[in-house]
Length: 125
Image 1 (cartoon, rainbow, N blue to C red):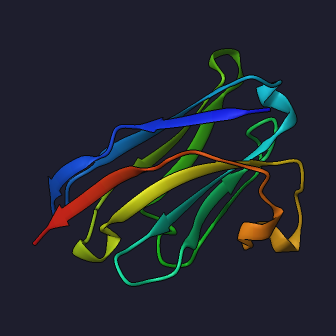
Image 2 (cartoon, rainbow, N blue to C red):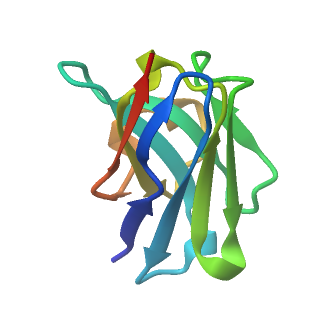
């Protein structure tokens, strides 16, 4: 059983930056692909980014490509989401998730086995 805990959320002005962390415990972190999702009020949870086991491959939603960077430190059992040039529409609860699957369905919630509780990101205009 893998436990995931996010941190780093907060309130930031448009154009600003935040770095989210996802600390994992209870399993071998390097066995898992790590994904980031977000859910805004009144909207469905959506895929943001994912990173493979070694950190050599990443994948992003079009809405964040070029602004967000996903990374991981397997020695510290932690994944990161660096968010730059934030926009008000990035406001959401951000969650990390873990899966053993890497493939075309990586953007689907259903392939992820473990989820964190989430951290709130609010971008003011």
